[in-house]
Length: 387
Image 1 (cartoon, rainbow, N blue to C red):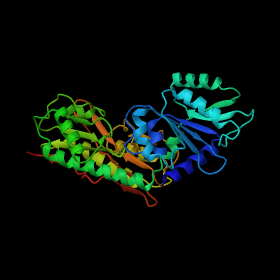
Image 2: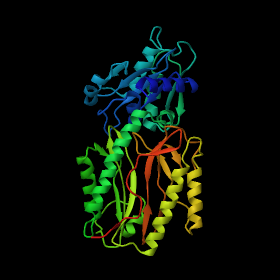
Image 3: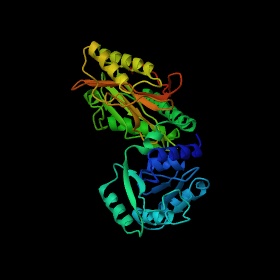
Image 4: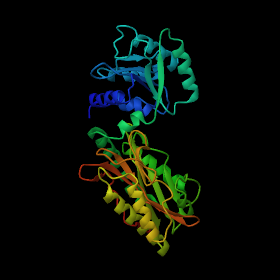
């Protein structure tokens, strides 16, 4: 999917939502719409105004600052209609832009009458930003507007990945798989969780990762029963479960994988937990296909857990992955709708027993016409690391 195709889909969504304009302030949305590479960081410093045209592609007017505009200008041809890096508030940029776009000859399909201009905004826009926008727009002479809150407007479009996005995430996962292979040789009793996590992160950076998808989870022994444990000073010991949830980032796109190994020889209880989780993940992965209800895989996993004598999964079974580590769609008992071709999702069942340990196994890949293409190549059989 080219940037033109993304713009066409956005134009169609504007029309369907009966919007004249949409204001995007989330960096991941702006990254997706512009396609700018190696520009954005973790700071929210940008506002993108998407103006619906009378016909063709929407206009894109971007407000940023001089820390980023130099990297944007070489990539903006054919993408942005305007790049504004003047020192001013996003609300002032928006007021100036709407004043220009709604003047006769302003070049937009926006209404130029007393009919209210419908401006889509993010439903979770911070209150201070909402107040600044309304104050600025109220100050534009002759502007009649209506703010329309939209949940997941661009996120829904982003949930269907194109071939370039899939290729990038597949490459990011190759780095992640290499990181796991390296850790099988590195892990040993006597290391702290923090030391092991740092080694994993550094190794992925040396293999070409441009950053982390999220803060690495590396938990040992009883800590592995905490799904989002933070690596700390606990020393790895023989007989421990070691749970690793991690991912590489490449060209702003994330990978995501979890593997659980045993230091030494697994006992009977560890084997039971592991084989139950692996069977659940295997069956859930086999279910994935277009048209599958998003609730179905987790409901099936819960049934498998119950049959084995365990309680329901305590977290969602999976989530979308892309520019953000958590995107749409969501695979859980609260999921809505059905999977589509191009959805990239994780499948990550887990069982956790307080004061004993936990197992989680996670792959991710893309929903295809025929089913599911798993990006993850790392082995999933129970690995016992014997020195």
